[in-house]
View 1: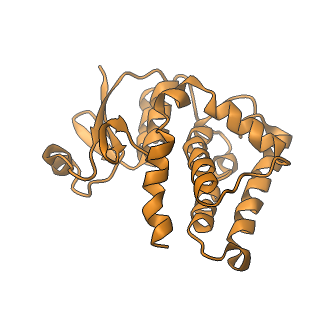
View 2: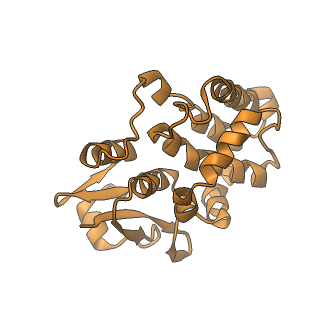
Length: 215
């Protein structure tokens, strides 16, 4: 039986997958585990009544497990791993599960910074990316080694947002010297699961534009 999954629709295009990286993380998990699901695209400019009734906070993603809608991608991914253990995406080392976890926050600070040279936001992001690159050099190609795990599926959408948004708004790219990072990124972005769940570049740009303008 297919799981009901509600995620954000693209702004101005309610029939197209939106730009939420946390929604994509859940979709990636479903695809990698080959779990059948029914997708509900939520128009954030006109949220349907049923969605608000089962989810008053109006957040995405949400997934229906045993007649109960569950929110928060961390919780959802945990339930999916428990109920559909094969293939396992568990990262056995708790330290590995945190690898790269500060990249997204550093990216947002740099993206929305008016003066990255003086506030250190660009360097802070570079430091996080270099740390990931060094880890991958020693332990890659994935964060936990040869096998892809949940930590990679969490990072993949965030790295794509980083690439698209910083390229568009700041004409910035990750240094080519971080070769292991770039190999890792290509590995993630080339997976069938990523290609199938990837939002349009235009949708990602539109999603970040208000935050950049109002920063």
